[in-house]
Image (cartoon, rainbow, N blue to C red; front, side, top):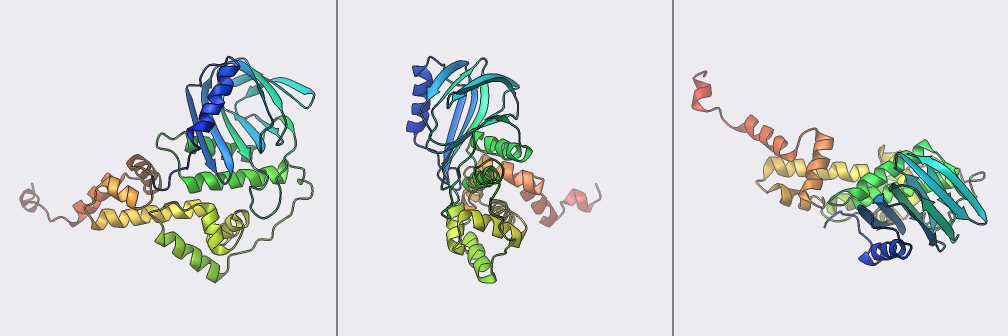
Length: 310
């Protein structure tokens, strides 16, 4: 499917379900898993109460609670923490740290495993261990990630990848071992040459996946620096620009062709007709069918009753 999130092979989902079964925990109502930019994003709905023991993860782990209230016990590094987590509360764990978890009610949450080399510029992300905290900006990103990964027809890869990069940047700036001395990047713009190459690449590939790393490669930058510099130059994030260009391309096809909505959606990079319709309506304020109908009514000649004033 064009533009859709690349999902991890069922082996990861199966491994997590096997861990739950090993510890006597029932299957969740829904479990959606995606992998972008080397990160693992897992959206869980209705995981039954229970307890599990986990080996250290290969990346930094952020758990974002979406349950109204979640009675949770966390144990790692010889320390335990017991508390009622409210919706929006988070816990953060460095990579490679074994842990134990127990919870008393059905759980809705987002888990994000972020690799140390997520930025692709040679730097390392090493988060600090935090048992319970809140961060409004991180919360906003987590909610968007949860929505994208939980979509029935799957989210847009570039959008999810950009959100992961944004989340990683927030973690480095506020919740990592480098937080006090994190590099303050200058407000630089893409050069005219870089911008033209990237925009041309986007226009020529609207019907295909456009991963953030591919766009950054065209500009000869790391994904993290590219995302910052693109926003500084264009005024919006790369994934937003790509979505808007896809919608504009779809509007042209709706005006000038009789292609079906499914054909238009796929040819402009949307992963399904429903994804195309929902995105188009959110940006344009009308569904593709409504948009096409308005255009036709404007250009069709009046019928005989209209000419007679009836």
